[in-house]
Image (cartoon, rainbow, N blue to C red; front, side):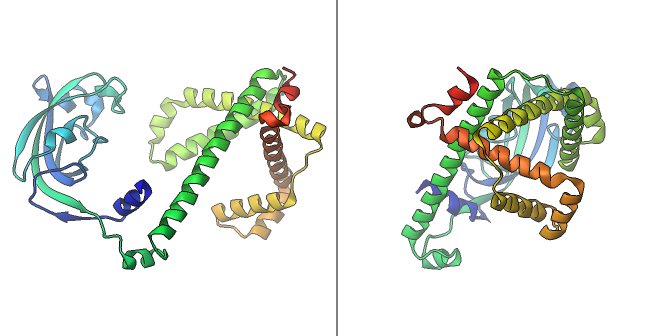
Length: 305
């Protein structure tokens, strides 16, 4: 039922209303903030204009409000009302320059839109290809079970990986670490730029990015060596069907033809790398499956503890 409620809320529409503000409404406001009588942008320039003042600003009235506590203070307000609201930014605030500071905001309410949930009727069910409510519940239940299984699997993979890394000592080739570090740095920088982070902001944190990339590179290479050794000992190979599935997934993500991508990867030697990744995944699956209490604890045997 919680999933059905979430589903209905995800397709809800908003209609303008003159009712007082309630949690879940969308509101349009004007606001101006001050700290000790001075504009927020003047007192804390690093905070930027976003938290200083806004006109015709739309926000959801819920606990995730960008200004801590504003939503609860706005409940009951009517269109045209103006209210002084004291906002204390927590120490772990995502607005770091304002962490721990207290600001006074003058908020004027201009419009209110109420969330209108659709009726769960036959027409709606058919629109989303459900036979009836029980059919919807069955699918949501399956999705939830699959999600829980995936989360549990991820936790077990992380636990097994951490144990393997902690219990195994390997001297890694410096050249390989440097190569992997460079590749990870490029990926991290590219991801941040695509997210809209300014290049100059990325460059300010380049040492931190490099440090994180190097730590991850060491983990990646070390784990590859460990899993490769276990695969050799247990005679585990890469299943070609899994290799093909991974190839098609990469092709789909990159918008390429699978066969053309295969040819390019074969020529560049990347198919060997892909097979190695698939083999390592199969090895990790083997470790997890055989580390259950009923399977004599293969992980303990592998690490010799």
